[in-house]
Length: 176
Length: 188
Image 1 (tube, chains in turn orange, yellow):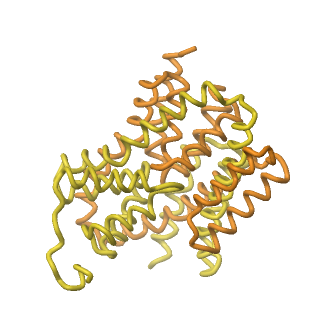
Image 2 (cartoon, each protein chain N blue to C red):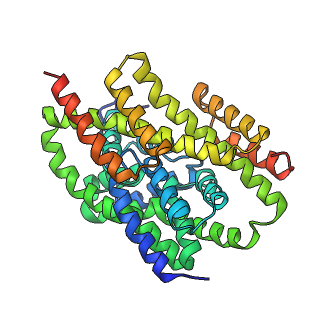
């Protein structure tokens, strides 16, 4: 059942991935999907989408999708190790970088870097939305739920948790 | 009413308060924690002004890695140094990670149960919708302000990563420096 070599490869990937996740964990999702589902086949497309949904609906940071994948590959310890791998190295980086960065607050290069990375984040988040929607929206009901949730989150300030609750209820009732 | 407006000294939280504050953000943060971070840190506990929060958030988003974890590091470190950073990060990630382990165990056992499958399908569709809204919120301002270069780079990296399935590393190494160069060049 457990595969230690898969887990160590996964942990190493997370460390690298966390450093190119410009704009947060959602930016890393296409690569995570590529590695975990397409290249290594550790998870089915279905399980990946499920894990993404669980991590989004549950309280806490959305990065916890890697905790679920870590659990799948190595049980509770694998889950903890994956959680550490996705955030500990970048947290350390953030700690030291923040002290340096403060000094260059108004430097033109800093402004160019910050502005230049915005389109990268936008493109990566859009890519994640595309890949997750393609996997999740397998029928008319699912498409309707995605559309309604997107509209609710875009046009109103209602907590999207309500959309999650409604969507889960519709699913429990066998309508999705 | 408002301590910041009244000019009162902003209080410096202790290690325990930092842990509890970030724990509160984590357990209330259904469907994404960032909005709750603002509510707890700025409105309720008044550790930061709205402006400080926006600045910290911009830096946390710019840094690699999970944004909200970076935010906890920046804020924890400012108040209580390295220990403050560690305590804040643990407060934020500890309880949700434990919950995820429980979810993982339940999933391994019950993911084939039909009604649960249905519920997960519903949740997945809602999560996709939330992402679409997030992407739209990021794209629309660029469209509105006619940032042609930004839109071109966003479209290019979308095509590379989502359609061509180029590894993220290559896409970022290629497009990030190019995008920064265009901004650097364009501002002169």
